[in-house]
Image (cartoon, rainbow, N blue to C red; front, top):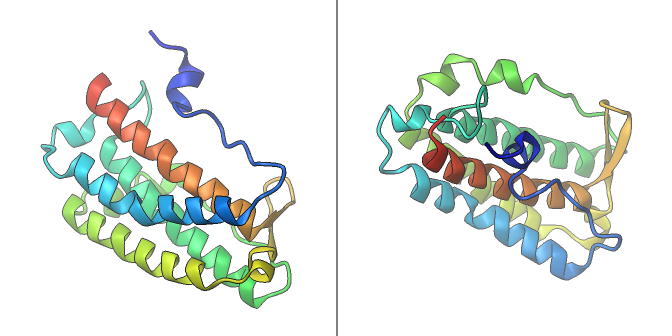
Length: 177
């Protein structure tokens, strides 16, 4: 069996460049833009049984990963908007594990979830493409560790997050835990 850390982080952990360039920002926005279509391609033909495949033992199912991305990315959009409209706001964390067990994660239609993910990303990418360099430098405080996060770093984290969970779904289809 593979190393659990490699299964949890199939593309590695996020590694932020020391200097974030305009090119990084464009690349990261492009990743966020195409993510819903990539997810749609990966899940569109899956049966109810296949949607229950996990990328690792005791991990989330494909359906839970998809819905986690919706929850996480909705929260990210809110965090962007808070940072754009308030001075260094403290954002609210949420219990990802508990949210992954709610009925809208476990029982809601996968095709409708894909539509929701696409809608969130369409709106998010529109906002991201409108931001100035100064706006990308705005920050929020994440209470886990009292960490100050700039929007440009958060953008990189979420581009990584998209690729990270896309790979989880791809791996779950192969591993079938």
